[in-house]
Length: 257
Image 1 (tube, helix red, strand yellow):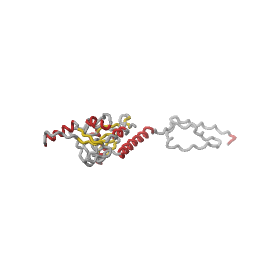
Image 2 (image 1 turned 45 degrees about the vertical axis):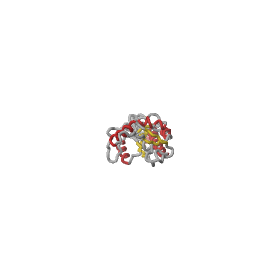
Image 3 (image 1 turned 180 degrees about the vertical axis):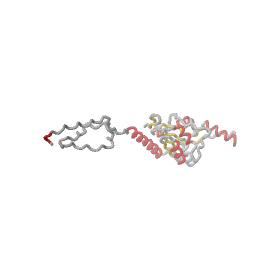
Image 4 (image 1 turned 135 degrees about the vertical axis):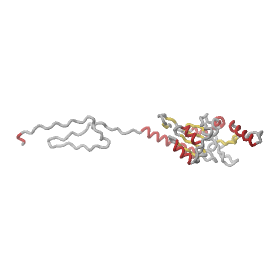
């Protein structure tokens, strides 16, 4: 499936994927791992540096950094790849999602959204990720799955994004579920149908001259050909070469007077 963007290029829509919430249901009850998920202990360089700064400020400074507990479902990788989207990370993990999340799910290395620094502050309840995602998309059709999407973000995208977009919130207590995949597929299928209708539509042809089977003009003998039907809205344009007027009849003989 392809969608036309500015410049006429046909590309697939993008699926922007958050990690914590959609893939890692961190808000599930502690020690109640959701069904189908596996527990992973991950110590990423970004997390280790942040924790080391926190321990330095609040102590104890020599305490070992505790790895992140992450719940991941290995079936999510193949399910994401089967969707009619180009996959892109839209997570605070940034490039580390390729090193720590993608291998567990069986995903290839994916492009990622690099967040602005300092973070955007759009206000009015708009999520800080939203302006960066719209700037990254540059008018390309996209769906975005995240656990912090609200109506404010949908309104902001509708106003600032020049293209189709689906902002789909995922419950962080359960992660991506069957109905979430169904919603993504339905939206992409709708884009495909819209693009097909635009691609195959063609304006009606308007003739530039009278049809070849036009009836003859009335005769002098009192018989008259059938009167042509009035011009329709489609045939109102006249021929650029109008017919010459008929020649006048010969004079009547004196005996006919």
